[in-house]
Length: 227
Ligand SMILES: [Zn+2]
Image (tube, rainbow, N blue to C red; front, side, top):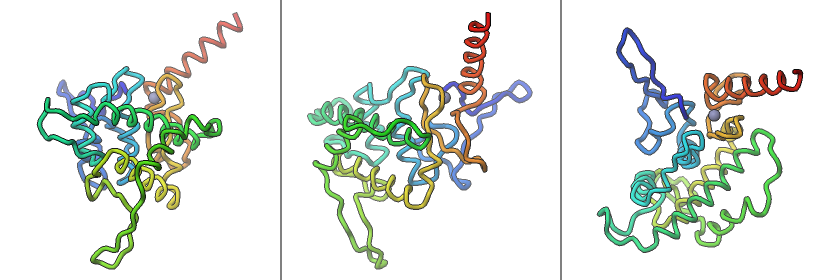
């Protein structure tokens, strides 16, 4: 993402803070910056956008950064709270996190009519389902809830946390908000963004960058063909 949600006013930089119904977004979503999904779908968006293909950065590429992010998002309780101490399951978990992230990105891609999902797309999510089981709980208020729910209770294992993401996706598919979560139309970007437009036709994470960049590229290609 090259758009940083900020602009210059009278020589001073003014940071625009994206808000969720007037609330400051949680720290684990600070890298999303713009076009944020409502809670709890924001957790799915922030998870997918831990990979920034446009900038070539990946929160999960750095062990410590990944560990801190996953813990902060409630998706995985680290075996030790202290940086540098042994966390033997981390390497396997980071592999699963990256693979599941690609799967969920493919799921979101279906919202803008991409190819049907392949068994390879879904395999990491099958692995999550094999490792974690959804659990029903009756709360003190009498409501029957399906968990794990990483937004209310940190997940014991990464598989539990990822299953929690799938349950959030299921709820968003039921209430219709899922269809607004999309991937940027720039094939080099594929940033997940939440389309709040009335027409529901938003196609870019940011029109000023990806939208115009792709339009200019297509224009140059057409001119080259015409020439
Ligand atoms: Zn983009």
